Image 1 (cartoon, rainbow, N blue to C red):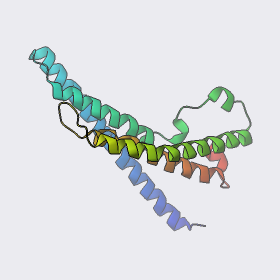
Image 2 (image 1 turned 30 degrees about the horizontal axis):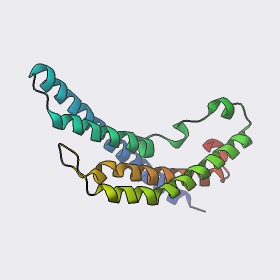
Image 3 (image 1 turned 180 degrees about the horizontal axis):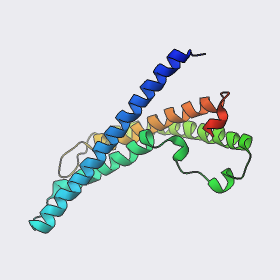
Image 4 (image 1 turned 135 degrees about the vertical axis):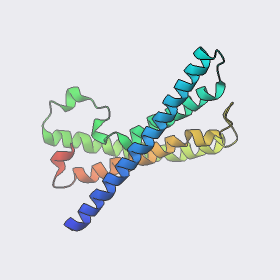
Length: 168
């Protein structure tokens, strides 16, 4: 059992990491939005579209989607079948949550080796304009798998704790 002082320290670290994740996600969004504004300016004001901004927008958008899904959106805020989930008792919700967390964890762990293999394959390819290695562009998917698996594991542990009702 953790002491209250240790628990507060872990909570503080968790909040700091959450703020850091939010800041990084905001930077990805800012990069996509800035690329969009630059592209609009060059295309419609200067009548000379540039290719690199489209690629920057695409890369930033891919990263912001997977980053936000893994690190910014609380796990209880992801898509659920609320039609069934909302009408069942709390103990049944707990069972649903435990089963769904186990399915996510097992599925994502199974996906990790194939994802690593595909990222290894992508090391030979580069993006057409910016020449960014494709494995760097799509490595955000591996971050998503790892981040969401860890969050699912944490939620699963909390569902077995004495305060499980606050985590369903």
